Length: 131
Image (tube, rainbow, N blue to C red; front, side, top):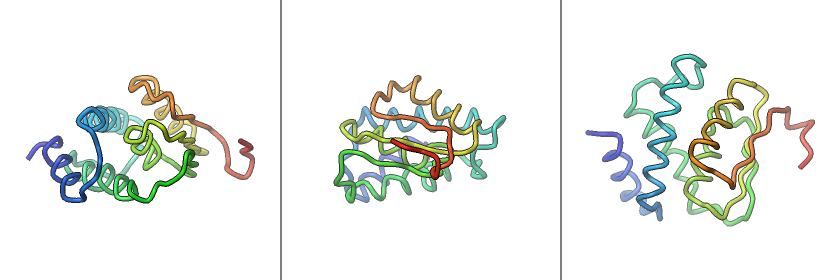
């Protein structure tokens, strides 16, 4: 089974409103995560299919419960779930925050490559962050 098929099947099984365009961006995000993970150790999950289940689908499971216009993802790490939600809900303003610079560098790269204008990446401790 491919990552694309596993993602599509999981989205259908959870009955989530995720467009084909968003699914393509999610897979592009996953490719970046896999590539950068080899050097930056962003996640302990290495298997590409496990990444779909443990990262994308787990992050998407909260989608039906997002009823706000803005979201702060504290300790976002590699962008989970913040970047995933920013991809799927273009009207949602997402701020991801992490203390580890290599993780925020990765998230900024993802933001740029995927054109996520609704995502702000912050390198700071949440205690010091003032919106």
